[in-house]
Length: 224
Length: 307
Image (tube, rainbow over all chains, first blue to last red; front, side, top):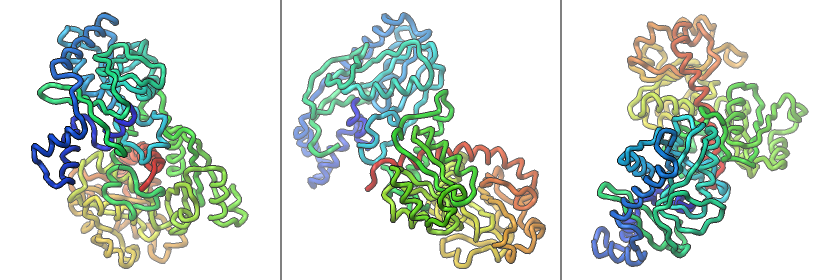
């Protein structure tokens, strides 16, 4: 997830919230709740699917098996999700590792807010979430998990955060979507899918009880 | 999200939403102190200056550590060792310090309104670290944080506040903060120590300790001592202690497991009996730890832009 999207999440427009957002926009138009209206609003945003629920599940399983292939087992393996989108994805990957019989030794979450390089440029202070790494990272192979990797700045911040918690043996990066556009020399070790979309589009992983999917839509001008 | 003003001058000017943002943010800063590297880079490049015209150890050190754990640079100016001792005005001193590109001024002064006056004259953020008997917002935020940590609610909580109210740095802030969060507040003390008109803030007044703490969920205490300023209102510490000392027997009148929060430097045997002091001490120490997290949250939130 890139900084802008991260910021959107902190403002309450995060994963799964697109429909709510569209409804809100539509209420402004006057016909709240109408199905046709919602469809019109979706067309306006040019919403399309990047990965179906089946494709997403398949990608998660493949990432899990690649992690095992690269590291050979879960004994010294830790899976750490980056807030916000990386956290549910990390849970999916941990579950997939478990199905393959290699449950990782530890799991956790990191919040990169305090490690951002643009804190003085982005308006009101963004919401700080908890960094919950309750194990000793020293000597561990830590797989950082983010839903979408874009500029690489979030990952840089997450690495710095992890380093302050100890000295991991190795840090690897898993991302469901790699949308290119890197501003730092950072590449994921495990990728679900590479896509290329115009810079003004948002890619969102929608986590749901009946399966997860990935959609993309236009970011309306002037909105963050 | 965030705070509406660049300054934190008092609890009076904050709304319930802002108070909750500060408490939520503080909760996440609490974990930083438990890490091997007790530092995050959030305020790298910012400078915090403590401008203290009154002696204070806990508040001063707490702000210093909060600033340093956010990677800000920090300077300490105390009146006794600065140009203020030569008679320079508060405003002149503050503007001089601001000219050194300071981003935060943390001000402690004996005169009510000192921080408010400065906030109008300087561009940087001003944090009130106690302006005499008026407000001491961060101390109240720490109390709110600790109460929240233990009770997870404010609505309907019965809170009794004891102390030398006309001179206490926390009475007014505590009343504003607790009322905004929906608690019921009772001010306890001899009528000489009850500020006239205080009931207009929506608090109950009890001149008997037994009435004041009956059924209380939380008891807020602050140090009571005889000074030149109050010796006409407190005949003697023995007399005060006779009627208002929180003893185990009096504490039984409060709710079961009532929280006893003391703001620091206990005067054992005066406002709190040694037994209750021992009972309340662990919580007071926890308050000191929480104080750093709360002040980190305040610095962090003020560093963002404002409406």
